[in-house]
Image (cartoon, rainbow, N blue to C red; front, side, top):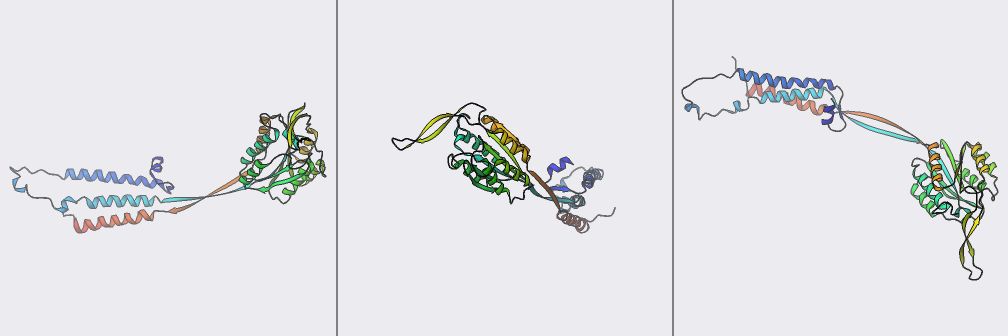
Length: 347
């Protein structure tokens, strides 16, 4: 039956394929017909055939096998019809039990530190966030940028193109000075407050500790726990030692803003980030290089998988009438020709 399946049009199957074995009757009948024709052939020995040379066989002789051929075709058609050919029309329904995710990205001045060669921390964080967003096609995602203040860049949305465009346009220094982790968490929680998603997540990316804002990070973490929101915290930056940071300053002589490079210590508050993650059922990650940040995002992506469910329905459309009616017509034509045009002479 596998060979038969390869010869059929796509989607066509038989409900009772074993009935097709009756098609073997056709070649048997043809073989018997040929054998009978040969047995019925007799030879007449005459001195010459000149007197019948100009006699041409009539149309009945030429087409004497037509009723038999039509009968074989009609029989084969009826066998195919009895096997119940049908076309399966499949319809697949899918739905997701998605994850609503808000990424809170630190845009403070210290994220300009150039220890994540060849670019700074902010550039690498944006690139890793872009990869993370592109890998979550089934989820709603939002984006928050924070420093001394917190701003919603993109609310929860499924519009990937718009989110990635806004992410690419982010720059440092737009949210003031400082690192307001508590404010960032509070803003993210406000975005997730009306969410009906099965899973609600905040990804907090920062390179420092809380030193601004009116909301205490531990208080925000407890609120997140109460709302069932998991917080994954990522501390970015090399571990220990001063880092080079380009700082824009105004030249007192010319009045123009110029860039100066300073060496500064930027300590990641690992204890605070760990407490936030533990309180909400999330995890704290430490990323000390671009590869580590990429691995961290990949791990969060693995932990927060969207569940996609699919159900396939198959509706069968019977096609045997398309074969049965022509087959019946062929059998009727064979019977009429046999009675009217090719009557069987008595022996």
